[in-house]
Each structure stands twice: as C-alpha cells, then as structure tokens.
Amino acid sequence: MTRNMGTWDRLIRALVVAPLAAIAAVAVGAGTVLGIVLLAVAAIMLVTAAVGHCPLYRLVGLSTCPLSRTRSA
Image (cartoon, rainbow, N blue to C red; front, side, top):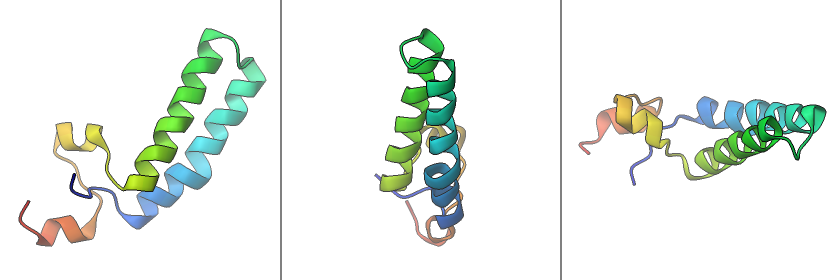
C-alpha cells in the first residue's frame, strides 16, 4: 500500500474532520442510523490518517503526498 496522503491532509482528517463527525454523531444520537454513519466516517478518517493511504484517492487517481509524485509506483 503506497502512501497517497500528504501531512496536511492527514492532520485535517485526524484533528478536524474525525472529531467533528464524532461530535455530530453524539448530537444527533449515536444510536440512530445517521449517528452510526457519522461514527463510521470518523473511524475511517482516523484510520486513513494513521496509515497515510486513502482507497478513494487511489480510485480517482488523486494523491496529496509530495513523495508519491517523485516515486514510481
């Protein structure tokens, strides 16, 4: 799995998007369908930020990692 996420992308996911999604999930009710979806989004954001690879980025051919542009993958 090659890295396709830059540092800023990872920080925004981990420190902004995931906490906001978790707060929104609690606000709407963590046991509701929307709450569960929001918690899943928060978990996905944290995992992708931790590993530095986003499968959706790979599907659409996007990379925010400056190192992956110089490497041959």
